[in-house]
Length: 159
Image (cartoon, rainbow, N blue to C red; front, side):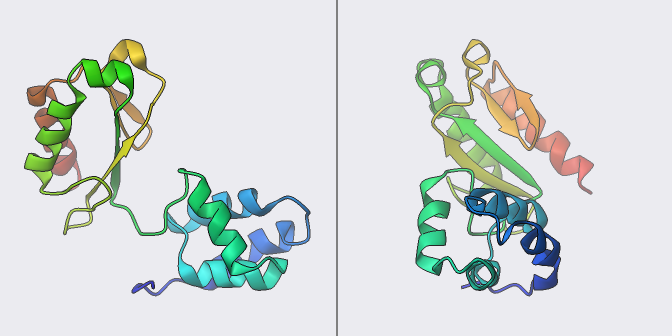
């Protein structure tokens, strides 16, 4: 259950536009996540009420697609590739570096809310392996030192 207070009225315009459009559930969920950064339980309830789709069905769709999140994420969402090319080029070393530097594991967020870590199957940047995306930026040919430098620069930029 959400422990944060959200302004559920932010969903009104999305639901006015899409609630009665058949086949628009994924669009509604994407726009909801754009608003809140994740899919809050209160938003799921409101979507169910507005669309007539059962909460369980909405959750089924939301959990099927990896793009959807059900917990708030940090200011910087780190998506670390674990695909074959990254794996053979030592993505595990990069994962251990991130864990050591930030004190979080896959699926967790730092206590200060600055970083979240998500290991993903593939980012489609095999020629840059090992690779990670942080929000919209892609970082490739990673080494532990390069990874530490990136994290340090982001932390400093946030202060």
